Length: 81
Image (cartoon, rainbow, N blue to C red):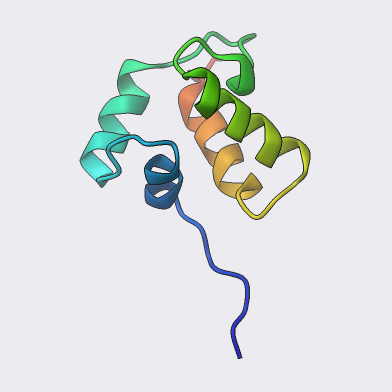
């Protein structure tokens, strides 16, 4: 019996048309940290198509939402409270 596929960060990057190796993902995240108030789905780092995919998947709470949420956390720098 086939269940829901398990999505991961590598597959998300491939879906976005980006290099999807662990090293490439880490480099992308390191080089593209977002400001605290910048929303992932509105970030300047995406093409229009990438942004549309992220918005659509995020807002419909699709299978990708957990991985998109993880990406959101990783792209925002940590601020001391």
